[in-house]
Length: 93
Image 1 (cartoon, rainbow, N blue to C red):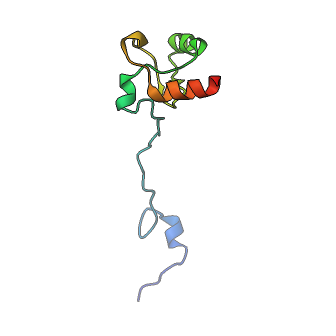
Image 2: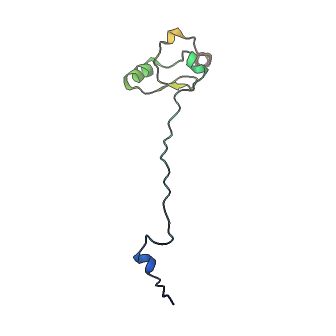
Image 3: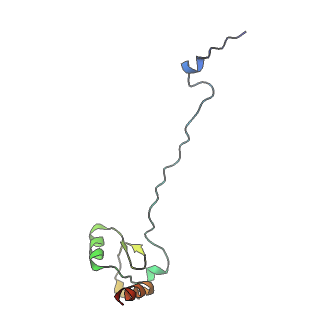
């Protein structure tokens, strides 16, 4: 007959049943800075101060229409965003 000591699992914790930790890959959510759609085909309304700050820091700006991006292109080469224009005109009315 075999004698089982209740304290045995404490002496040798690597043997027998136990628990383990499942490691999950660490994920980091990044804000969406580019909608990848039609908004990239327009020049958007943003204050000149914010544009200058963005050029110095690399931080994104938010247009009146809600588009978030880091300005890199010459806006004079694109038509004005209709949503930005409408919002601006409503603000000035």
